[in-house]
Length: 297
Image (cartoon, rainbow, N blue to C red; front, side):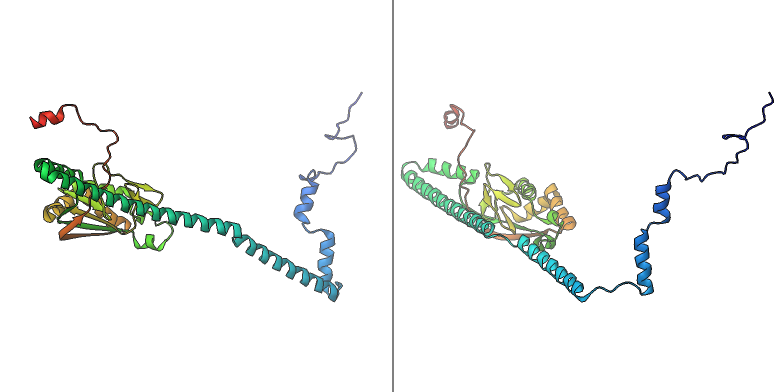
């Protein structure tokens, strides 16, 4: 049987037209080629030709009234959300009053403690002056070395203050604030430079003193400090300033001034009066047995 050749993909004698490559994507073609719905297109054409029906005045009025009501409602809601409620304001006022009362009570307790320490020293001196003056002299020397006695003498007064941006509260100016580390470095540098007594904002430093931070506040022996920070050191002013300049503490002060804008001023003074510290309680150290007898012998 003779087989006539057939066109590929169909019956003999049937002509096949080539289809579109995107024939199976009818929906996508409609979206791309005709993005506007026919109804919207007809309405737009009527408006362009001036044949669109005009809205009645009462419908326009309703639209205006609804828009004004929505705007007023949005403004009222925003004001209500931003305005603090009475309960929040009362709670904040109560917390502020408690903080103020606590700070005042702490200041009063520190003043009472200082007065009691002075009274104890006076009574101790009166009791030992007539009975054992040599022992009294030794006690006075020990209290002087421990930082418990008031001292007077020449020295340096170094003042640190926050940068102008930090004082103005500019964003990103936190590095321009004096930190507890800065005061620690300066105090250690002054001790190494030959200082015999050091105080920060009137708080005497001793072997038991701690300089630390609590949030943005700097504390010395748990007492908060306020800027500017005045560091006073008793000793020979010229030698101390020369040694401080050559030390890492002097380099740290230069970095604070040049890189962070912190104000640093150093002043030599002929007479400084530093109070004694009230931190005298040893928590861990105990005297060795027989140490006093060997010294006396």
